[in-house]
Image (cartoon, rainbow, N blue to C red; front, top):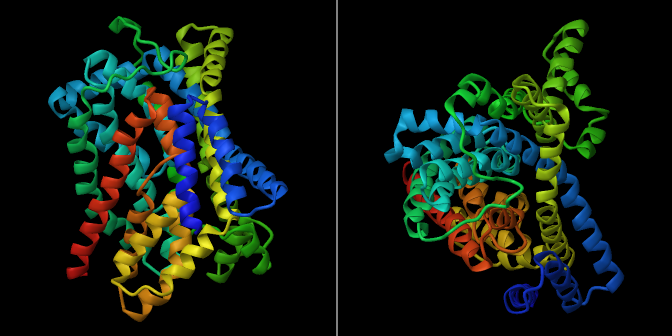
Length: 473
């Protein structure tokens, strides 16, 4: 019954948006209440779920979206995006531009959260399309496929890293093995599929990107352009390397159970156990805590904006008023996008609170099959129901752990199979779906034809590759 209710909710959402032309944000809220009522939830409980979903989602993404939009606008208006574009074309050639973008997506997406890296690189896609006259979605899919695979398959991203610990997998092996399915997944889901999107006409939001022709003398240097673009990557890489070296710090509740008050205390606990002197322990713990602070996506993008304001704005002769005005326009342009994503968070929270996850878990207890395939299927169902790749992975792993251990399945491959399922079926309750739709100005149908098909293709190719790998590992 819960899965039928989810299906009815999706149908309602489709009708509200496509048939009645209701704004996606309002449609998501209406659907959230409808699903809650169909699930026999109390109206006040539904309201609590909606408010919690909106609040949690906004708390996680609003600063990332705002700083990402500001950084993207500065990169665009200063000509930094053009500088990077021209050099990439000179180096790789137009013939190989999709592969250049795929590699860029991997390098940027490995240390950065999906939302942050998407926002940093969007100006490059728009600039490529404007300067080369190549189709925008044809350029975007290879990049986004690499970002998505990195987010769902590879440490140090939160879900694959945490799931590695649940399955007792070697994080370094997960990263190494994950590169194998990533290659065919991106080539098929990104490069090959993009050939069917060339006729899709894209109009990016006017306040986020406006085509402008630069004289070469106006363009900033390559070094400073790349520095501003990769500042958040460099900062987030510090945290990624810290986690790989010492493991990700436990959640606050776990720290409390351990009798530790803070992340600094966690690192002090590690180095004290290793026999370091109190002074050395305090210094190293303080440095690692600073790395973790600076590597947070919100702080990393904030620092990147500050660097860009001074290097690409004030040092290039612009006044602070001009830089702030353009930044304000970029934030205004994403206001509806933020609301739509928040609406998706409300919908997702109602689905969670209506006990869909418990229902799926009860079904899975009675199914027997290859643990890798089962992890993929359960994770994909959770992704369909909740919209979150992270939630799908973290919910699937505890369910599959006993079976994986009993059958002696490689824990590293279990992490990858779970990640492959978590990337499937992206639709209305996924913030990535709405970001892709709104930033590229697509219709609902076009978003399903491009983004959803790409995500699902990546997942299917991923699990097929993992099953082949299981023959040898």
